[in-house]
Length: 335
Ligand code: KG4
Ligand code: ZN
Image 1 (cartoon, rainbow, N blue to C red):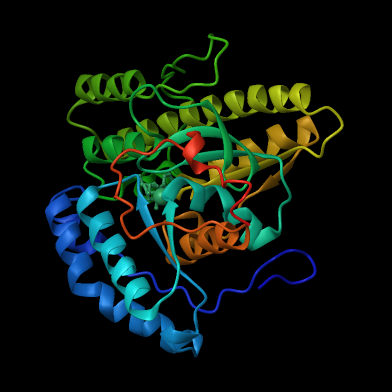
Image 2: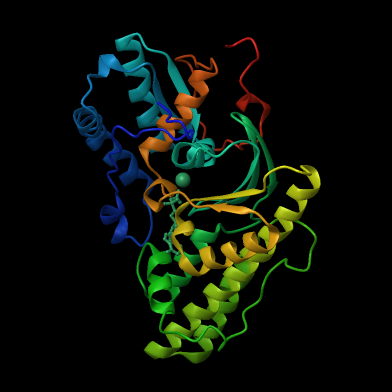
């Protein structure tokens, strides 16, 4: 349901993080993730209904992520959604996880189309032009590691634990960001893509050269790495906004950030400066809705459903599912 400003109301949003189960392994273990989905999903659905004060029979439709992602967990979620849809006689909406991130700013801030999205998470680093529901154009992506993944790998290298982003940000506060001049990969090229693996290697070589690392060394490396990343993200965002201004003259300029890395204050400050200089509005939804959560998937489902979209119970889960495929579009005769 939307209010007058276009924002919607979240009736409940239960997130059962699995980070603790995976922490001992230094990363997500696919098999464990799938099993945890089986164990917890029923409880989460019951709790979500209770907190929302509704009965499952009251819902209009059932939406679930159908990809992209670790296929075990996606299969458990999608199969559960299909079973509910069949048992309740409700329509099924198969949601692309990236579309859920892309539309979250409309849930939280009522942002109007078109806008530019920067998605920076553990699995993705992309610029996506969001023209409408189901209507996306990818302007750039990473050619190797995702940004969150780079944070996680640097954290591991510095023995800071998992997930690495918050740990790197925390320790960087007491570090000197100018001590090491790490590379800013691809920056000289006129494309909107990212590359973080060379930067990660430079960090590793520096750490090896200094070993054993003092606490100050660790903080300085973390701060210098974070600064390199912030510079890259800021420069690319400025270029992407220039393209937006050229492609959509006279339109309101909006940059929406999504994904766990949006929590990083140094990166957010760099983006704020870029947007201010470009006359653009920066929208960063509350961090709990930037990281993976059920409400954003429900919202994407609601947006698609409102336009007449519906999927068959034979819809298959997809480990890979780029946002800009034509099959994301909602057929004109669906409504
Ligand atoms: O969107 P998300 O919660 O999950 C997916 O990857 O789908 O993003 C998690 C990623 C992790 O790589 C984590 O290290 C990173 O976001 N992250 C951060 C921060 N908080 C989370 N990276 C940098 N600074 C942070 N404060
Ligand atoms: Zn995500």
